[in-house]
Image (tube, rainbow, N blue to C red; front, side):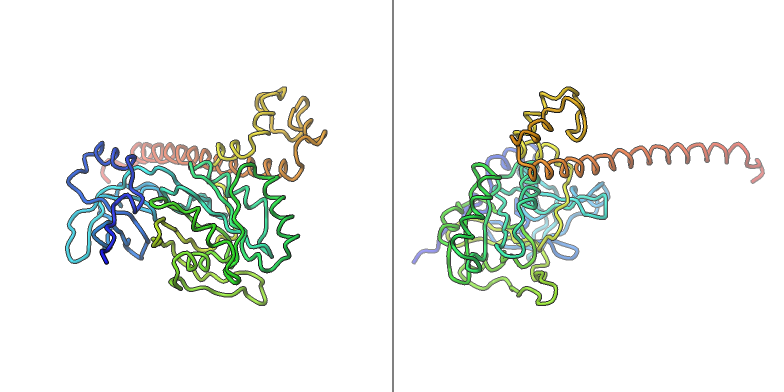
Length: 362
């Protein structure tokens, strides 16, 4: 039996990346994909195999934020490939990006890049939360990523309860794919496999314990990822997946597994929020004031629609919360910039004063 020949397109490579490779003059370098992050390095893959790679010192020196470092999903140019090791020369421009804000830092975390579809996994028991899905939806939309929902562990509820939840989701999210699954009783995996297309990249997102790793094991057809049970005292999932990892399915398709996320912080996703709540965005154009916050202003078309029940109260509340959060992070950026500017002026003045008052013999 002949072994199937793997093409670079099967790893997610496309005309977008090839055009940028040529534009950047990287024809002399091998192009590989980052499949996992390690301490002090990365695992990368191309059609020839997998390698360990490190970024060059000059890249570290030039980096101004986390976005300047490779992330899982990136395509990178490498050199000095010997003994299974390589140097990363350049990160190719990203087609899409999924990122979130840390809750206690003014810093953005890249979840993964060059994703085609982000699967939000919600278990039907303790984890089920429509507001959290909306947060993921806004993040995905802002990063240019399609979103789909996996409603997992459906063996825990009755058919009637499942139908009710499906109605709630479809009422809140129009024209979105929802797949109901259970690895325990083997339901929905065939439907999920049919949805996954060869050469496309899918990212699995969700809280700890929702069953992301079990679903990926089911798709792989083997127990490649360690799984854990829900904590009996806390009622929360255990963090079994601790790093981002890319997996390649036999039938085609690429899956990125992620550590469980309990808090989804918005990362300046204003356009994503506007796209998600398009009916509210459209109504806001009819408000009396251009800078209307839709909270207390007279002549607010959004508040009128809320009062007359043309928009859902829970949906409106989540919209306001998400808008405030994205504006807060944006405000922090401006404040930090202004603080740096003021500090720079202080240092400049201090140096001038020091020079002016220091004795010439010193």
